[in-house]
Length: 78
Image (cartoon, rainbow, N blue to C red):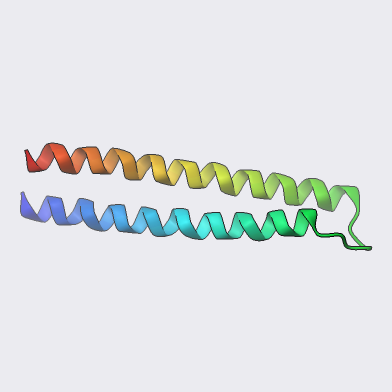
């Protein structure tokens, strides 16, 4: 049971890191979208917006998995 709890704790840490990295990448995409650049066209703006939104979606997914793993860990400890 202790090995399973350690595995879930490592899983939680990994998914939190993934979520944080995706949030940082999403921020850079958003900055690329809002900062004015002369050579940026409409297609590039749409691509940056979609990439930023996609990264935010995956960030939410990662933190949802973290939430589920924390409930599993609580159930395991009881």
